[in-house]
Every structure is written in structure tokens, then in C-alpha cells.
Image: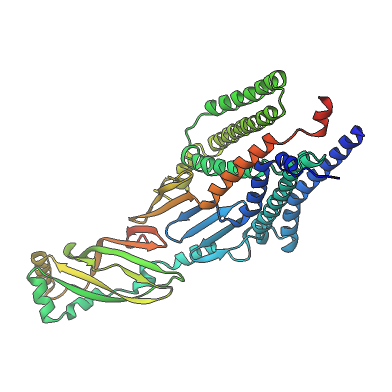
Length: 190
Length: 278
């Protein structure tokens, strides 16, 4: 009688072991079978947003975002703006930008110096007024405050006999926020 | 036949009844742990019964993970039912086996999670940068294995009560797991030393000219930031990834369930073989 009980108890132990095994191995076999034994599709699923979004980040460069910035346009400044600059004040310049990314992005900061490339003279400084949030592939206008290094700029204008055309950027930095990941770097490196 | 209800009620393993009910409820009581990179770049909430992963606002679905979690859910619910029956009928011949089937399941699930979220960041923060020596991990593994052997000998010699043997078995398995962890860490140190002599920093420098990496991952619960810097052309770019993680409400219930499970298991009558020996 007692021997029978122990035997039954052992059989139950074996059955429970196989139940445990089945509940561990079964789902693994079922998962691979459901995806036609394709390892990548089984483990990662059909879509991998990390891969596609990181691929999208390759579109993120200043050329794609700002197009070809033409600083020669600065010569078309209104008289009021020009006077404000000459008196050491700042002016706001608006630049329309379209995000090349398929997810939202925030431009937190843009700053730097404008230099005359011909004479290597720092003409002035620019700084983003407020951070701007772009929706996916969205277009917004960036407002950038600019100020002029009056004496150096006037000397350069005099040297050129007009507003210099060959203007470049110096110490220009860009700070972006993509889903809380902060990317900061010099314009040109991003 | 007259049934003595009071006697029956007194025999019920009440810890087991509570543990069984908690185990049936546990898979539906919410996630145990969350991990976030940035604010929505990557969000993971998980428990042994499910995982929700979103990356850049899109859901990620893994059939493998879903089936595995489904298996764990069914397993815990069945174990809960078994514990419930075993506790209601503690003197039946099948009672101890059913109790043993699931008594430590939730305990090991909770321990596994804690181990993963402690050891994972430890490897990333301390071993991947390189420069670690094997000694401490090998000594740790040896001490743990010696402890297991010593406990086994002492238990065989001095522990006579069934409940004390069960408790000692649990302690022994925990120490054995610690030995396993030391061995895993030792293997990691060995592999990093062999294939990444300058650590992950060396790997980044060789892949990206002028690239540096400052890895900082929180452990169990907290916030930290990992920074990648690279030189590109004449400029420098830096990427900062804020990483935060923490335990969730479901984990608290898991701990309560595990405690009741252990109490039920320790309190439960011995199996027929053991009774026969007596």
C-alpha cells in the first residue's frame, strides 16, 4: 500500500517535470514555428524602429535642414536694422527650415560667429532666440538674433567697398534633442 | 460519515492558500521594472509575464518574447492552482509534489530580475571599460562553491526537521546561483581582456577617430547618462543618452507572493517517502 503511494507520487513527479519542460520548450518551438523558423523575424519582429530611425538620422545634416545659406542676403538689410546693428544692437533674422526626419526633433540651440573668409575677420555673432520643436517632416521658422562686431565689420565693409560676399561660420554650434537624447556639436560635424 | 469541519480547516495550509491566490493574480498585476532611454527614445516595461517596448514612438513586438512570457504566465497560473489545491488538501499523497512544483517559481523570477538589473549594469559600467583582474571573481566563485558543499554536509548531519531541510535547500541554491554569477563575471572579464584589451573605449577609438565613450548605466533604480564624443572633420560632436530605470508596483506584489510561497512550502507536511522513513 505504502509502496504504491510512493510509486504514484514518483510518477506524478515525472509528469510535473514534463509539464515544466513543456511550458518552457513549447513556447520557444511555437514562436519559431509561427514565423516559419526565421530567426530574425522570431526574435526581433517584422519591424525594427531603431534600425529605421537610426537610418533616418543619416538625413540629419545642416545642408538638408537649412539648404544653402546665403549670407549675401544680409546686404539687403533694412535701414532700421542696419542702424540698430551699427549702434551695437541686435536684429532678428528668420530662417524657414524643414525637418528631414520622420520623428519629432527639437532644435535647442544654434550659435556662432560670422566671419569674412577673405580677411579672416569676425563680423558678428548669432544665437537662436527660442528653441523650436519640429514635428516629423515639419516646417518651422527659426528666429536667430544677430549682432555685429561694429568696428571690425565697418573696417571690413570699407576694405571690400561694400558688404563682403564670402562669409562663413566660426565656432558655430548646434544642439538638438531627439526624444531626450541630446546631440551637440559644431555645425559641419553634424 | 461525519466530517469534522474544524479539524479540516485546521489542517489547511493557509500560507499556501494566500500564496496560490496571489500567484493566480500576479500575472495580471502589472509590470515589475521599467527602463527609459531619453524621453521616449526607448521605453521598456517588463515582468516575467510580458514586455512592452517602444522605440522612437513605435511599438516593437517580438514573437519569441511574447510566447516565452505566455509560457511563464500559464506556468505561474498552473503553479498557483496546484499550490491552492495542495494547501487545501495537505494530507493527500499528491499534495507535496504539487506544492513543490510552484513554491519557488515566483521567488526565482524575482531574484532573476534583481540579478539581471544588477549584474547587467555592473558588467557595462565596470567590466566593459577593461582593466579588471580575474582574481576577485575566481575567489568569489570558489568561496561560494565551498560554502555550498559545507552547507550540504552540515545539513545532512545536523538538520532533521523537514522544514529546515527545505530552507537549507533554498539557501544552498541561492549560494549556488551566486557562484554561477561569479563565474559569469569571470568569463566576461576574461573575454574583455582577450578581445577588447583597451576595453570598450579602445573599440570606439578604433571605429570613430577621436571617439570617446563615457558609459554610466544606473543599477536597479536610478538615473545616469552615457556620453559618446567623436571628432568629425574639424568639429566635435557629443551624444548624451540619459538612462533611467526603476522597479514598479507589480514587483512589490511579487515579493509578497514569494514570501507566502516560501512560508507555504516550509510549513507544508513532508512527502509520503519521508513519512514512511519516520
